[in-house]
Length: 617
Figure 1 (cartoon, rainbow, N blue to C red):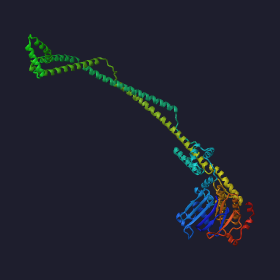
Figure 2 (tube, helix red, strand yellow):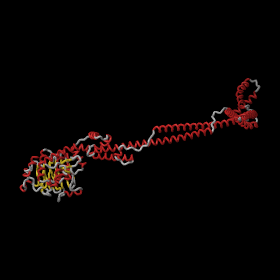
Figure 3 (cartoon, rainbow, N blue to C red):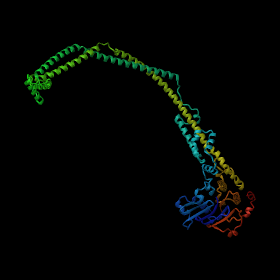
Figure 4 (tube, rainbow, N blue to C red):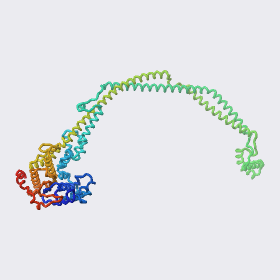
């Protein structure tokens, strides 16, 4: 990326700044309060929307230059334009910049940004910066080569979709260690300790498998004997009940069979009565006749009877023929009704209904007696047959019941003995299971611990980080050689040192130089080619010259496309190398350096006298 122009209006102290950098490096110099930092902050606003001096949007109006109503900054680059407006706080991007800002951009716009990151943030950024390109298969291989459990590795890999997932994965594994310790404690009821857990065994009672088998066999045999005896008792009770039932039935049959003679006599009497009543009914029917007959049929029959009686004995052929034709019909009538002239005995007809009912009763009595006689004869025959049921007494059942009680007592004793032995076996099995589960949880503690260690900063990330650190530490070594500044180094634990001294222990100018070299390395490795360094004036004259020559060389190498430097100086820096332009900032605007050149002595003599830096350049 290369900045092609910067335009600022009324942002903080920068009232009017317009510049199209013609050289790779531009040094903005001026007195205190000239608006140098305002320019630097405005450029950062355009790219990131970051307002350094206020945190809340409601304070944005305070960032507008006094007396103005609005402020704007626009930074054009070879890949797009970035702008920011106040007090609205609108940040806009065009071109490729609208697709998203490079991840490394904040650390080249603010050289102190990388050193302010946490260890995990530095590690994450460096992995991204150097594009380690670690795949899931590669991570799996590295973890398995470290003897990590394959199942746990697969469970953790989803958290390692990117190289930035190591802290989360390490935390996940650490939580799993805690959970496994808790599970071990829950199983054992004891506080976890690695030495205690190794080979821990639950207290286990002695178990005699042969004794259990024998006890089980004896219990089964006793149980079988109980069932057999219960079946015998059931059979005896069934036989006793059958015998009693048959006895009752035979007694009833015998009693019924004893009625045969009486019933036979009764039947004979019933038959005699029926015959007598039948004779009486027949006689009454003969006396009763048919009675008066009313109707055409009967009137015609009486007419025929009269005609036949009147013509009886006639010799006339025609009359004889007529009588012959009438006689068959008359005979049929007589057969059905009797003679038409016969009316019968009225008293006999009156008694006939009574004797007809008596005949019916005599018939029914005979039928019932015959039925009872047949039943009595059958019962007598049944009573005469021998008994088909076995006689079982209550004494027989009592003997079997006593035998059952004895077998039940033997079964209870055998069952209690078996249960006791089985409970010991169950406790032993539970102890074995507890020991197994405790061992499993202990193994989980060890395996998750190993995995957590490998996922931690000193494990696989350190191996990967060593690869990631090589290019940036190589760039830092080259910068230290070019500038003769302290050797900046990023260690695998993410600490930063200058000549082996911790960053936090360095003086202000040493920290500034370390930050500058880190920012330049990030700009170079990321390919951004942009660098902003404020407060250059923290350096002494010798270090400033070293800075300018170093950046000029990096520009010649193509590593730096645009570098913006800001310093409080008492005069413009004249006689600079051709890669560097100096802009004098005065009262929020850029002054014409050529017009004021005669007011300040040039620094070219200082550069000319720095032979060591010229040689380095």
